[in-house]
Length: 153
Image (cartoon, rainbow, N blue to C red; front, side, top):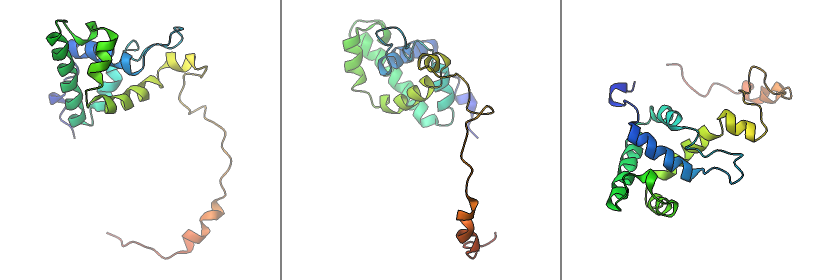
């Protein structure tokens, strides 16, 4: 069990920086049809996803802090205030961006606005479900005839 007391959630500064990073990972489309990942406020999704991986959460939190420090070293108050070219340059130097990208895409393509923009119904696959061909379970007969390959504990 993970101790949630050591994982209070992202601070407002971290959420601001995270939203800016997410908008660089998945920017809004030029035609406005698709929102940017930061615009969708995926920080909550990322927070929930990282609850089971505290080391990764720590890496991402430290990375967000580092980005703000690097922005201040360029006389800008925080990462989100940087020009796009500067953001891209700093993000290319950060290790945490790759694992964050996985979570960004996972959250993005579950979002109702994105699904609607793709022309998909924003719903889980079940209970409405999808039609599946019936399985031919006789294909397992050879496996069922084999002797037990394990011992009872």
